[in-house]
Image (cartoon, rainbow, N blue to C red; front, top):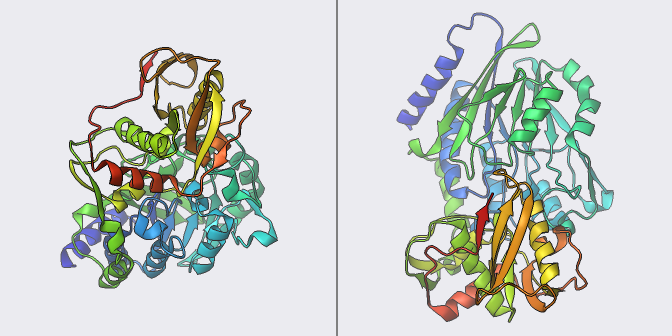
Length: 475
């Protein structure tokens, strides 16, 4: 603990060096923690050390606290371990990330009811019967200063966050730029103004340009790793990567009701070996599930790409559902490396953590082609992985934002027949969000897509997907 304390004393001491007047506001921020419960004891130790120096420290999350660890996501109630640890640490507020909706409206309402901190989203409207209680903003008193924090949740191309439409029934959303001006009155009343957003780095740069009267944007969604923070149009933006490789300590100096200095520094969690005993005890309790450690198969070779693991997922879906073709959105493959050796239940749920259902539909080759193009469009210009067919994708340019030409081939390397009908399986997220013309909307399976993979692997025993891919990209 002493080493951790001295390191943080140094960081905080440097951050206040040279300040003669005014007050200091310090904010420790995270984003896209994605159920990284194993790192919470380290985070708790860091917070304890910082609060020993500055008891007015604010702790903010820019959303996506859940989805990414089966010990958390499959717990009953879902994501209770993460919420318990955030409560223990003493978070002050969290944005709503798009994955906060993964357990549906009832699941979200339950999570919010269990938290000791508010969830902030000014651009969401909740029907009373939804049970979801969200605040648009909070004002915190820090040494007599008013710190206003306005929350913004992500809104995708379909007018909802990037989740299945079924997960947000009873909730309506507005674009951030339509809502933020409605709270300009709040910024006039506060000494420090913060946007707590889960919209992505590029969008936040645009928000800084449109609303330069904010001092800080605590950003999430795109897993962008910033070195400390970046200033855009006078607004400091902070964001870290995926599952908390770092957290950010932001120091704001305030004089005469205005921020006169701002600085953001990364704190690397893996450099701190000390851990909170209380958080460790909670973690041990939540991880007491031998089923998660059960070995179901062996991986013969190291896998080092999303493509290869995605093909394995699709092979499992295709065979388990007795289909000709399977497809998975690229963003649904949650990690890109798997070492040779045992595969456990936990590994597969980490790979496919969304509790999606399989959807089987009959599509012509032309309908399949349109579905693949639509899937690319809704998945941030990433082409989906497949089994039973392969693709050569030609883009108009290197941004991959527009497909110029798409050629599809069957398992034997022959061009796919655009008139022939194929039995196709995907997940319910793709089926609901990839808007493309098709006669058959499909039949939803009774199990999860991760269950399909687990069952398939148990039958296979050993697998090897080194170097596998289902598409070639050109531009």
